[in-house]
Amino acid sequence: MVATDSLGQDSTWTKVFSINYPDESGTIISLSVSDFTITKGGTAPISGQVLHDSVDTCSLRWSTADASESGLGLPIGEDGSFDLELSNIQDNTTLSLWSVCGVWTESSFLATTTITVIEAIEEGCTDPSASNYDEAAEEDDG
Image (tube, rainbow, N blue to C red; front, side):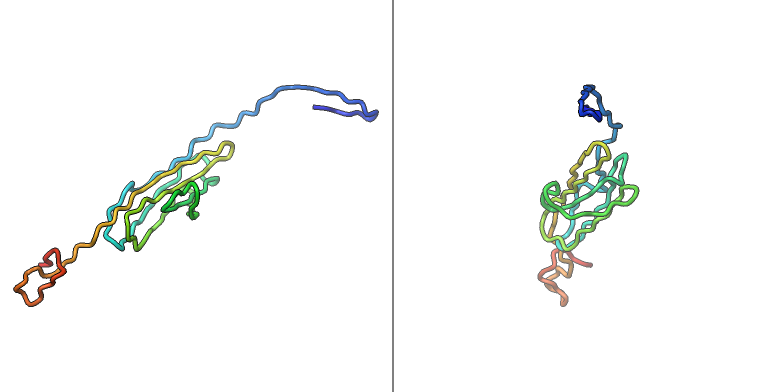
């Protein structure tokens, strides 16, 4: 530090000091499920919780690409809870969720969930001799 008096004379003091920040927990995302199997065009409801000592400092983004690079914001409740529902899913996909939290030290966490899409089983009459025979049916509806 340099102090200058009214005569323009400088005095210099040197001192080394450390600033110690309080410990903070790391960021964690807890998901309700890590993978889904749904029928084509179906819905994938995803819920979870962001865990951190100071949840009010957290942000959360989601993407079907790399959420740490780009993504859409997702609101977090006061307790860190969140809900997301993806609908009309046509292809297998991986959902990424990226959270960043911290007051003194910033930490982040990336969670993923895999969504596997299967073709819907067509139900109907599979008896070719019946009057209500359905050629597209894969499973008899009784």
